[in-house]
Image (cartoon, rainbow, N blue to C red; front, side):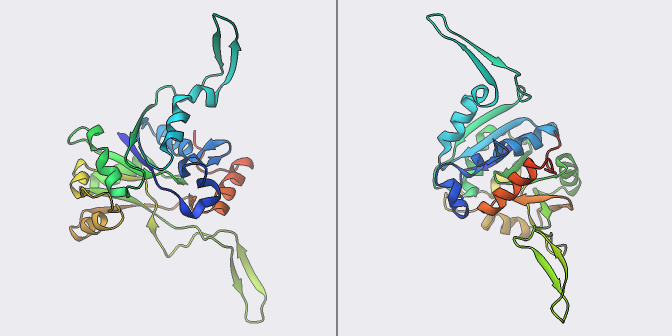
Length: 260
């Protein structure tokens, strides 16, 4: 199945990084978070990508245009008949990446509508955001979607807390402390969606409409939105602190999403 990734937002809550580059290009362990998301999908056998570009989209184009330069050691033989040798290759040679300009200021529903021409009629597709990592079982979510018969299945996740949670006794003694706990009584949309081709019928021809508003509301009203529950690791990258947290996990060799 083709994988559609929303890469066009400005990421204003991560201004420390996104002033200079699009949010999906913010690095985790020296590679863009977008690369990590794509590696997750490829691990599950889905390696045809459609990237919905917007804000500073040319940087994403440049990254993939020069992918060998960005991922390999290079030897250059200078002179009139110069040669280039790329060392140690990479594991992404079977990837197909479509870079689609969907407008700098467009909202998410319009970006999805804009890439309809790349999804054959009647073919389902995968859809997610360019700023969240998790241990989602992609193929299990597809199975859940097929069993539901609905238009769209989203992955429901327990959000990680932005601050350490503490439990305090009446005398002021701290009984427990958990860094960035996951709240078991709350579920949010973690992205990693599975969509029937009918999903495009819910996308209006209006660049000011967000996927998460009118289209989702209509899906809910018509009983066409299914949830695949994910109980494992999931972490968005909405703030600078969260990007640092993800980088720390990677540096310590404790990145749960690294399944490849």
